[in-house]
Length: 313
Image (cartoon, rainbow, N blue to C red; front, top):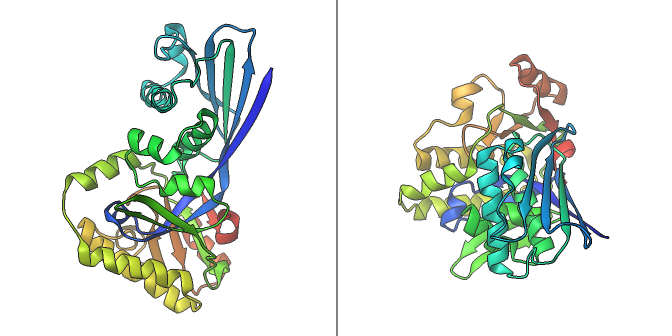
């Protein structure tokens, strides 16, 4: 019996949401929450893949068996233990792995893959990207290619899954380019991450944005400049101004009100959407005392609040 283990980091996109798909320079960071994959191979067992997903509370939310033959079809009696949309995506990922590596899961015996998610899958920290990167390592396929074929996103989340530190990320004519960087904003004790309680469908948001077929050359340049400026910013007020400028640019691009206007107009500081607008986490920065910042959001009934150092790897 052979056992293997893989781990990938979750992610936050600090700058460059949406426009990273059109070549803007983005700043992203891995977080302290991730996903672990355990793989056990028993050569004496039946030729099946036993797949299981376990959430951060220890609850099994997907449990299904696939035959290693016939294009990894499931045993129908196990489909009741997995949501149909989750199953469809999982089968697409598995078959793309086999397309990229024809030897994937062609061995005899039973392969058991158990995934342990270290965060609430509704948080938008990368439940899909961490799983995909772990599986790509096991399948010996390129995670960026796998991500592009299955989800069509930029791939910054895959870069974060692989990286132990923040990074600058860009898509150019040759593909994905990223470099790890030292990113440590000033006065991190006055920066908080708050979950809005809505899970955004990143794939749907990507498709919707790309379907618009608009080009934003000037805005791409502005966002790229802000990403670089954030990286080197050592003054807290300047940092907050850059965050606000980023929101103003994206408000124009998306033709949507920024989150501070719609939900937090009385907040004494700046607020930035992270990733798809309207859900998942926001970043709040203020000159208020840390306990005052946290109390502001608690009073508005937001329960999931992390300080910068609690969140960022």
